[in-house]
Image (cartoon, rainbow, N blue to C red; front, side, top):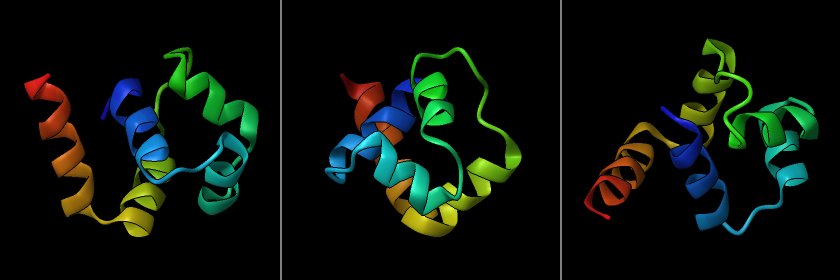
Length: 68
């Protein structure tokens, strides 16, 4: 997963960075750093993201962005 997909997932759900941080159990600054591609997505964050939104939804978002 990359920063673009991560941001797209958040925005497609209509979430603020703070709301996404709360859902994933991380800080808002970490969300900001990930979205600006300044910090890699850790295994822990990736796992929580998949648990929260589902693997299928994440893969659909990735595929959609690849077509753009």
